[in-house]
Amino acid sequence: MGDPQRSVTMHLVGVAGPVVGRSILLGKAAVTIGRGGDRDVVLSADGTVSRRHATIHVNAGACMVSDDGSTHGTYVNGQRVTAQTLRPGDFVQVGRCRFRLVVEPQAAAAQVPRGVRVTPRSSQTGLRQGNAPQPPAGPTCHICGKGTCRSVCAACSRLVCPGCTRRVGGDVMCIPCADVFNPAINKNPAWMVRAVQGLGPQVARHQPRRVAEQVHQLLGQTNLSVHQLAAEGAVDAAIVLARHVEPLCGSWREPAPTVPPRPNLPGVSSRPPSEEEAKTAMEVVASLDACDTTDPALRREVEVLSQRAGIPVPRVWVSPCEVPNACAVGLVPTSAHIVATQGLLDSMEWPQIRGVLGHEVAHIRLGHSAENTALAARAMGIALGADLIGNLVFAFSDSFLGELLGVGISVVGGAIVLSQLSHSLQQHEFAADAMGGWLAGSCAALAQALDLLERSQRPDAWTSATTAHIAHAFVVPPGVPCSIGDIATHPPTPRRLFALAVLATLSRADHT
Image (cartoon, rainbow, N blue to C red):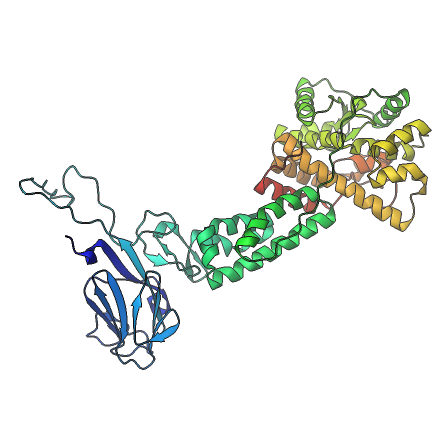
């Protein structure tokens, strides 16, 4: 029978005080600790350690610590002891030096039967010729499970190899903990979620104090972001963020955020437009001096996006304006139009153009283009018939704009009505951003397009008479006063980019 003591390897690994990162192999029956030079482990740098402080006894695979009459005592897991049997993972405190007992399995020595010849070792490598290299001695890294540990994470006390460590300030941490303490993640709550997920269930179960304090702070900020996004109207981003953070809040015993309800997705009407609906939409398009596109690539992009959204393919127009922007027009999906400026096509790459077109197709799919067209028609002085208004009110009875159409858009002017109208229009933009990014296959590309559009608007390049009535329907505000009132028709672009960053990092929300 083999010696059971040799079936495992025991180490004391320093986790606090002057011994952080130091590993002590318990390779004999008694290992003495103290400040005196005659001790096996000399802790001369710690004045609170006695000359003869403690002894670690190893016998038959068991480990015990005994105090040798020290002045300040020996502690196991925070309790002062005179003698105590140690279990793997126990913490031993000697003065200011804190150790953790690590027990690693050790490959048993091979039993060589009599008469079997042992392959000689190579004189160059020291390995038996023909055998694979043996695993390195000492405890293995708790992060990658491969490297030999050389230090202990200052936050979670896990053993880590050099390849799995980062320096945070003056501390050495494992990569997951370093990510949690990285101040850059504060820019995006989705990065906070990913960092906390990277800690893993074991750390969440034990919740080391320093890590737990940071995680609770991050989850608190993330919950606040969920509520802010929902209040602003970015419901899709709020839902995706809340669903990812809920299980983390359960693991770390933090109150979970309330998941806001997602608005019902309206059905797609397949009825042909009435003569008045088609005429009204064409008058709004004509006011932008647009012409039918002759670009087959542009048509093809709109066709693909429309098929994915499940709507009839809208007619595509190009305005000669050099300022990049776009809008969607139409009172029914079967008679919808997308107008893109020449500046948009000239200043952007196809991934960004696809994101903008996806945004406009989303407006059509969600019914926003009908409401925007009705607002533009009223601003242009086009009288809407009773049947047309009735169709719109019926189709959008659940929305504020539907209610407004029912009582007459001419009543716009009161502070409360303007505030509600502003919130409704901004919520539409957030919803079109989320669905548009999904349709185009990249929320990040749409975010890049929005940033470029925001920086490219020049009010002096637009003719106020041809844009003021439709300013609320463009991807970003064109910079000219909006005819429907002195209100914010679009959310601030930084907040739209914030919501898109959450969606791009965590998932592509399914809107089908």
